[in-house]
Image 1 (cartoon, rainbow, N blue to C red):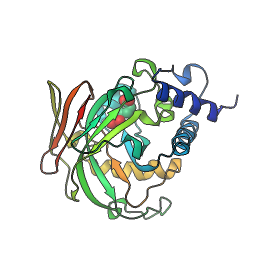
Image 2 (cartoon, rainbow, N blue to C red):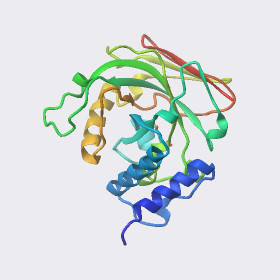
Image 3 (cartoon, helix red, strand yellow):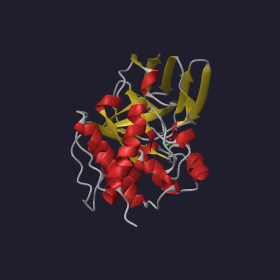
Length: 252
Ligand code: OOG
């Protein structure tokens, strides 16, 4: 049976724009990972048709705990659009989301276009800065319940993000991370991101080559969560990454 890529993208787009969750695609049809990335492409095209532009990419499942939970050994890549960006110190409206959660992250900035097919590609030579970041994930699936292919198709739950002030690229390997959202505080280390967020950049380059995802000058890369996600409610949210910086927003 052929997969209706455009139809699946519309189903996820309607869930996002209406705020009414959908059920697992894989419960209805067999979707392989390559097909799931094609659904994601279509989904992003629907956003582009509404005037949004792609400003970066995000990685997911970069923490060993999350990979184990999902029973997978590969990261996932999704696209970030300008409409998802929350200004540092800005405000995000909770009515935009279904059941949002927030994660503390490290962001990287791509300094020049990347030739993803270059066999001697050195992705680090294309990165010039890093920053503390927050990501809002908001699965379009009921109860955040999905398979690996499902979440790839759903643009890896990407829904919102904020990036702090950029600092020159340095070693981000093992830095303390603190996330505060309302009364909840969690702490972790950037080492939870594939032992070192730099490893996430290598994994990103590989996934972008395999699934034909562009990396352009100025793009923001979110390297994946440094702690478990926590539910996003009304209130202030901040992320501090030791010796990199801080970022925050207010959810209302
Ligand atoms: C998928 C996105 C997970 C991460 O950093 O692991 C993610 C989800 O759990 O909804 O962004």
